[in-house]
Amino acid sequence: MTAPLVRIRGVHKSYGDHEVLRGIDLDVRAGEVVVILGPSGSGKSTLLRCINQLEVMNGGSIRLGEEQIGYELRHGHLHKLPARAIARQRSRIGMVFQQFNLYPHMTVLENIVEAPVGIHRRSRAEAEAHARELLARVGLAEKAAAFPRQLSGGQQQRVAIARALAIRPELILFDEPTSALDPELVGEVLATMRDLAGQGLTMIVVTHEIGFARDAADRVVFMDGGVVVEAGPPGEVLVAPQHPRTRAFLARFI
Ligand code: ADP
Ligand code: MG
Image 1: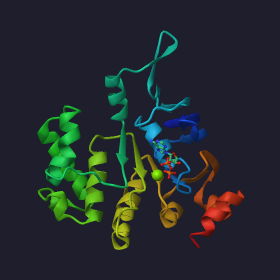
Image 2 (image 1 turned 45 degrees about the horizontal axis):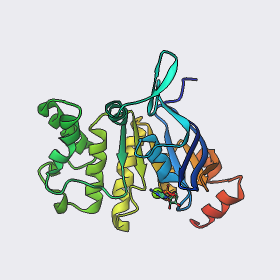
Image 3 (image 1 turned 90 degrees about the vertical axis):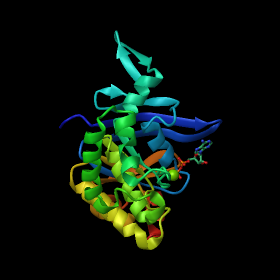
Image 4 (image 1 turned 30 degrees about the horizontal axis):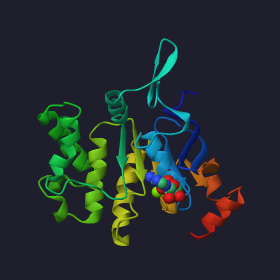
């Protein structure tokens, strides 16, 4: 078997004396779609934020491919990365949040090309051509010149997904991408995410959409109290959960 793209080992994170992550181990292989389920407060967002270095973990390690998140190996020793190198590492990872956070004063196209042009120094022509491809991929080819306020919440979230893809990330993290949407708009965003999952993207998705977990995930991870309680294929974790806490959590969705 090939080495995992993401390798999380013993990750701890505390806020003051509140230990939010209490030793997380998780591997994600290239092309794999991992769905993280768990009650509110179980540390799901914190884990994604540690992977993306929006938070600094207190212990443990995360590898992305050959690199250690936040560190570099020099002369056989791990050294903390300077800010610029952290920004470069972060640019290997795309993130989609519950709140889409599009720039309201920019068009859809400008929102998507902003990072590739501003941070990645791609030519505007190349970035725009790629952005138009991505807009077609999320079903919004005709909205390039629109402003976010002219779009529905579901359309805005699909733009946010296109924006996350614009940096050509090796891994894309989704943190409850449909939780802020009106119920009738959830389906179109999940459909977009299913398409991406089918195209070989490596995705870690925090969601309460059990249906998505069932038919799009390669693996489901159930977190509670800052630990991974149970993980496995959806046909096992969702159908025959082994742990009472997983069973209690899933019972709410039946
Ligand atoms: P989840 O995404 O599973 O709902 P979170 O990772 O957001 O859980 O939060 C886990 C716990 O950490 C919660 O108790 C939350 O209140 C706490 N927490 C999250 N972020 C912070 C922060 N910046 N400062 C203090 N406590 C935090
Ligand atoms: Mg959360």
